[in-house]
Image 1 (cartoon, one colour):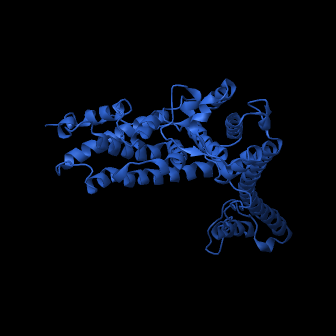
Image 2 (image 1 turned 45 degrees about the vertical axis):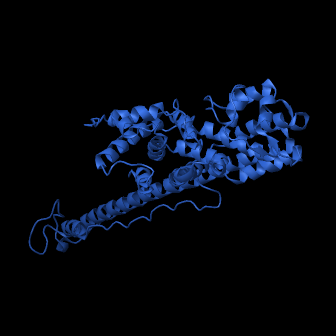
Image 3 (image 1 turned 30 degrees about the vertical axis):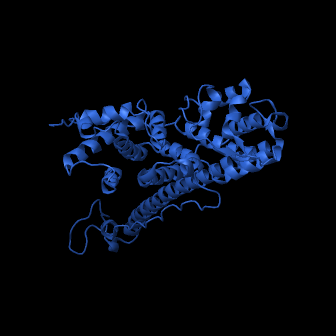
Length: 408
């Protein structure tokens, strides 16, 4: 992975390294070290990412890991940034590390892609926007990859055809030698064949009987060989066709089952988590339970149409388009709050709506007002972002490299 984001910061004059390329290499090494940590424990990357989106960006506790990674490769970096906390430096290294980590751990990209659908329009980070857009592009690509893998072969897509069988040519020389041996004691060059017919054609019946027996064996051997080759090729192609059609049928059945579950949920309007119909719940609680129930039926990287599906469902229960503040979710009953906590494995970081729902002392970073249907989509994105991190890919251990020491 090239140091594209770090170089972008330099080109925009957001970082000043005094033209010293060794400092750039040290920051690149720090970003790669941090990327490995993020890839192995992607849930630890979210608090740092959210800190980068804050307008002041001053969250020393969130940037502790970033500072340690930089210090491991550039011990005296603080001397080059004397005017308070080097927030821009932390952002640059964090964004670079996140892009590299997403290449290793796509689920992290899925989570960031989902969160940025909510936070992107609200983020006010000035000239850092260029680097953030690069991160979002990498995250969206990872999201599409995860979505494609979760859906498998789509119905309507033709199975991959097995490779055509290649014809096998029989050795003419081998056949000729065996026939010459069947015809008589030696060939036209007076060379004896292998296990030849001991009789010449002039021996009449004795010769013809021996010749018939030998020719029958020759023809039968080559016919049997041809049949075996054909059978092997048929078996290979049949297995390939079976695997391809089987994958197609399985994917189709899975999609059909998922669609059936979603339609049943939409028509019943009954909450499994609340154990009562949505219409009997208060608006905030109906939204929370609806999102929790829908999240249980869908993968983290879902089809974009699902958000419209959710909006229409909420509007059928709460037709009002009046905008309400996010603080309304802090007033929900404990059963709804517990349902959210049960739907995710990790404690949501501060700044998310999830944290405000599950922890009364927390509040979302973005103070916005939305209709209930839009809040449902906001909450779905956050829950699926957290759920995406619950099944990370295994990351191989990287060999330790010598840390660069500063000479300044």
